[in-house]
Length: 414
Image 1 (spheres, helix red, strand yellow):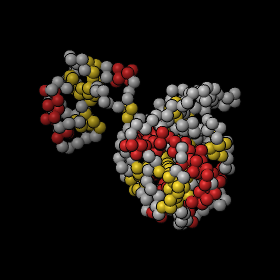
Image 2: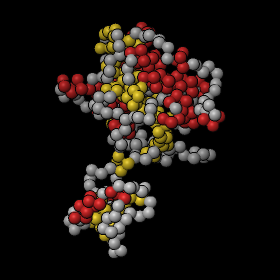
Image 3: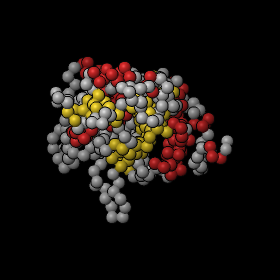
Image 4: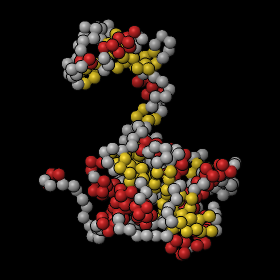
């Protein structure tokens, strides 16, 4: 391979071979039902799994499971410990750079191995390890399958310091497994000032519209390259429609003629129009006022954002997996959008937050001072059908259950 075509890879001690990473490591899993625990031969869909995701991902390979979409919000390499709003320990984010990189690389290799050919992966990450992780993902997925580096505004400008710029963004690395991947182009409702700016004209019945050219770049030898109304397309361009279609548009009143005889097409505004998302997301901030419903897990992400990702990169019935499940936002989004789902986390706090969320819903954020003075809101389940809809299986590694039976039973009964 010529030096200019070589992939860039990171080098560090104890970097495992791919063949060793994907080697089968069979585990025994239990499905919890209140105080009882039952052996299972395969991991059921629509479940939360309490275990190190390395072993679960390895099991998915062994079972031949194909994942259409991964969304993950892993540790950021911050060096901090994280606790829930009730001061319950959630997880420790204190690996050194080399250990962190290899921790993530091994799991990314397993994820790629389980992905469907039209699958995608979104990795939500902070600035601390963003550059390192980009190189790792180029190595694992191929730089040609890098789709976007998305910048998300996570909060208002509150993180000011005296000697550096305010930290108000985090990032999402978006890759696909191949060049042929699922994509349902997402859009957002535009602001009124954008509508007024983009569609400034009105017709005689009050409909908003804008004017766009009736030609497009590139020469054509067919009908769209021929004369219309005695005019040829501008040099280096062609008509957007064949002349007969342009005549039809003109008869319908959808062609505007300028004073010097230049034709333009009228494009009308309608309430279902969306504006395309860019790679800067400033509308999906973390919970920031008391009426927002949350679980209280320390790194909980915006539900609307995850729903948008799930909708953009999967279809109904597809399998969505979150290997760093945290508060269960991805499972919530997948269930609401009629996807199958699996969530994985090794944190007991994450297990409790996810199971409670999937069974009972979210609670208003409230405030720290008065949060214990009145019972948090938890919507009731009005019917047996609703209870079945809300159900989320709880699966546990049998070795973990043997070590912590009472703690796991307590989580199962939330």
